[in-house]
Length: 366
Image (cartoon, rainbow, N blue to C red; front, side, top):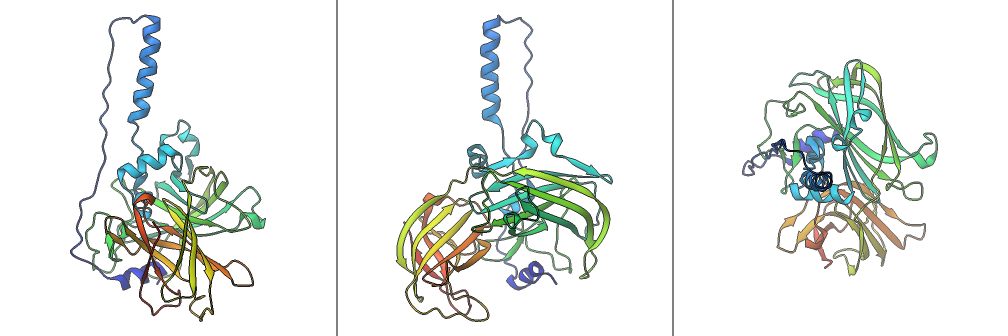
């Protein structure tokens, strides 16, 4: 049993959470002029039409990214227009990013990134699985152009999006809010067109590399399935390789906090936060109780918003550790499972230690 399956089996199901799936469709209207316009009028109209068309573009992140990084329609539009997200199907040269081998086409769909983390989704078309099969791939990814260099190393995870998200109560539900099925297989991997989406989450390694403007190399070498709970079984081998320029905009900001974390010997000095991740910077004020299960450093888990909404399960993977051998300072970096409006945050929710057996605590930041 893989860790994701284990987690979903533990969090349970909340049958009271129901929502309707949002589907966006856009109608297009073609206007034909039968009278010849003057040259100047044609130029003016062309400029107006271009501006109007640009303003009307609807940036849809795709099923995989929308599931991995929950976001409102407005948030998707804003981050894309600001340059923190790239929607590849909108690009004029999108066809050059589509790679077909063995009758299977893989193409990047959406990239969202900041200073430390990046989310990348790919659409996979032409690979057939049944509704009860779990797809898998053999994939390698690295940063920069020197694959064997330490500067290429990243921390990361990747998976085929299965239609399951974690709700605000920490429960596994389908993307439309409906409860998980109980027939032994819960994944909804295929979209309405029979396509799959593969999601990669990466974190830059401090001191070795950075995310903004860097090149992410992704190399798929096979696609297959996980039969039952057995090991991955390759079914189609090929070569689907990509070089993706990551966004240069992060929308990150630093907030000075200087407040103690209750039930710990840590003070939050500052936080570095973007709409998709946070780094909490600590000063250590006393002895740290580490164990086999953790470092003893407080662990970020969520937020309390200014309107009183509690979002206790926003943290979606990351790292923590001391900044040097003196262990006088520490950091906890975490990406989010959704896009966050920084201006609406009131407090951080943290575990006072990452060793377990404690209740969440709250630290107000603004």
